[in-house]
Length: 56
Length: 357
Image (cartoon, rainbow over the protein chains, first blue to last red):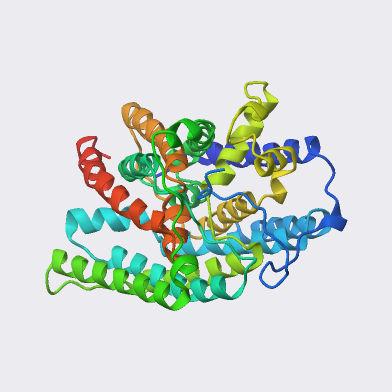
């Protein structure tokens, strides 16, 4: 059977890439000197990432 | 679609992340690709596993999930005890958790995808799941924006077994509870049924290893829903529909910071992107093969997708952030989530059959 969902896949990925590009351009420049440690475990730095389990 | 151009595009994005964001985020993108490749390659579905257990008394999906939870707990809990920088997925037991997990368990059967399932099926190119993703994000954003009102209905402090009992007792209690569930499942399905499926065994092992790498690198367990809500919140803010400073959840300093900075710096967003890419890579060899839906089924499926997003915020995570990461890092809210979502699934599988999905 002919796959007619190709346009939807393209639209999905184009919108996602455009969103990320728009968000990157509107956000403040990333300060590479403040880069988080590659490995949090043992780094001694407190982690401050957002997580779905958090109530705030 | 060919795999080589996809691999080249993903490699280019990885290099761009290393160059202009951070090495950590680039490595987390690879972890996300691993999630997507394993979930899509093994068709490791939380939703389908529960449905086949209820409808066909087939235990293989549920046993794959129990194996995954046990392996992840064995790996994660000692690390949480050893490194103070690492966080468990601790959500508060609350009225919102009871309601949210129940509705999520129901809606995921209709939408045929949980948090990770919606993502990997969208990456595979399943039309309904691709269309659901933006609604999931909007629902997740609205749920987080109203979370304060839901919490006012009643909540307890989060309970972390590793923090309260120590690593040994927490791990022992978790493994015993999972073993009890395995026995209950075995009794429910009756004798003579195969308990394990090869692809779900290797899928469980691979996911447990990837989730542990996620925890060690990011300092927090695997999550899905936060990233969705963040994306929709950014859109709502840009359109002037929403002022984060006036909202108790988004007005929190950490959330305000993540709203202001690029999504490429957010842990959950970057693993979500990797997951989509990993599933897309798998789809080059394994097309999704979804059956066509009627307009009524589309409308119901999309509404269920919105409810998935909204309810997962009330429940402090989906099957990944709440159940998988919660239970494997010793959070009591993960166990409550599992029980309530399973009750919702019992209704959801009947609704799914009635709606002829």
